[in-house]
Image (tube, rainbow, N blue to C red; front, side, top):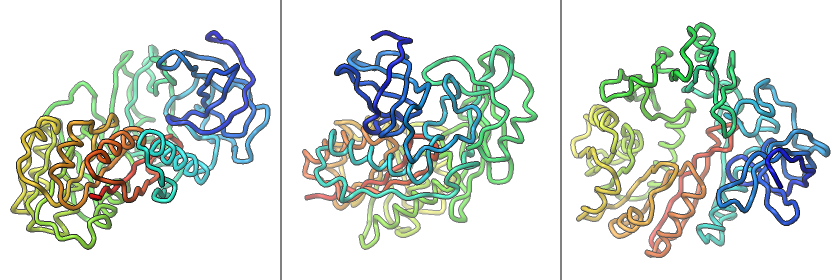
Length: 391
């Protein structure tokens, strides 16, 4: 098997990362732009990590799935934009695939035997088009703006993005040409849509304002913020459901961003002692402003893995929203040792969640429930709220 070779493959099931799995002469092949049950012709593109399996790109569908639909995006094609994974199927079927991946990852890497019983996924409107409120664009050699192609530095030039908010597409239409490899971030704020050159990222980057359930949050314009307009509210409301019935005197919010999740707890328990930990200086500064009306909040500008080494007191609840790589062994061990009631884990990657759940299980915590939200339609990404309780 060599790059460029074309194979006829029977697609077996969905895989993590926007791929589906096929086998050829005993070798696993991860294939893009196909669906379970299809027969396709696919071109091998590269070896997967470990060099025991391959990545491939569908070039022809021989037997289509009943769930296949025609993509509405002209840039979703072989050697096209790498941003979307599932433009060729319905939103409903995408959620079925994402839930299947979540359950499989928890069972495989987290040893969660009842994953199918405790996991659920919900749609969030808008569920197909015009939901993305932040896009990062790169200038091509000709100075036109676009997105990276799949697993490539090449640029797919675009004149609009179907999943981007319409205001972003309006800005894109008037954006002056750039120099090759220039990058810009277009952000829909509460009252305007702003263009940020990426290289200006600093603690003094101008803020955007984002509204969540009637509350305004200051966010560095090019800092982290969920890209779906309903994401922050959906996750905040799920946090409130997760703590319903508890009595919380103290809690920690780790990898806290600008304090949205801490705010959701403080709305229910305004006198609780809150430890809010965020490594990014600009985000930590904004958190202080966003939570200033609450009296017992300590904002700690430090890396979570360093801060957890110094934990002394136990807390009723710990909320964590780690990066895609997860929290890791040491952080999870410390959290498990210093939490009294619940650990609420916000996960953007099912595999990382599963690995951290396995660690927690070793220290006497079990996964009670996972509620996932399809906040990234047409892509393989999902956001999950996992609740762990002490056995």
